[in-house]
Length: 71
Image 1 (cartoon, rainbow, N blue to C red):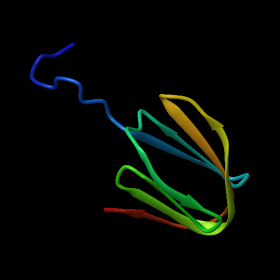
Image 2 (image 1 turned 180 degrees about the horizontal axis):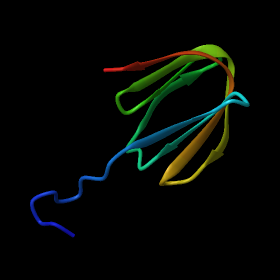
Image 3 (image 1 turned 90 degrees about the vertical axis):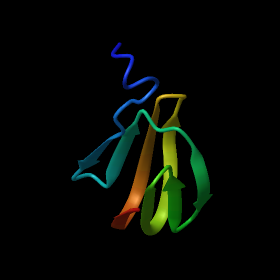
Image 4 (image 1 turned 60 degrees about the vertical axis):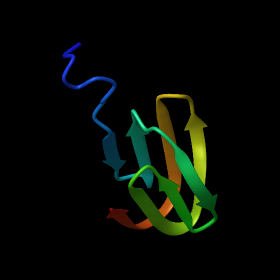
């Protein structure tokens, strides 16, 4: 691995047409409720949001996704 990058890993966000988002290489799940999930710098806003799968490297979110805020 390049020593200048250290532990940096690119966060990957993939959107699917069947109301799914997969976020890979995330660092921290900060907040979760029925209409908002905050992961690192992403805020996913929608209705009936649920985490389907989760491991230390990947989160799969399912639900009616209205907006993704990057900040």
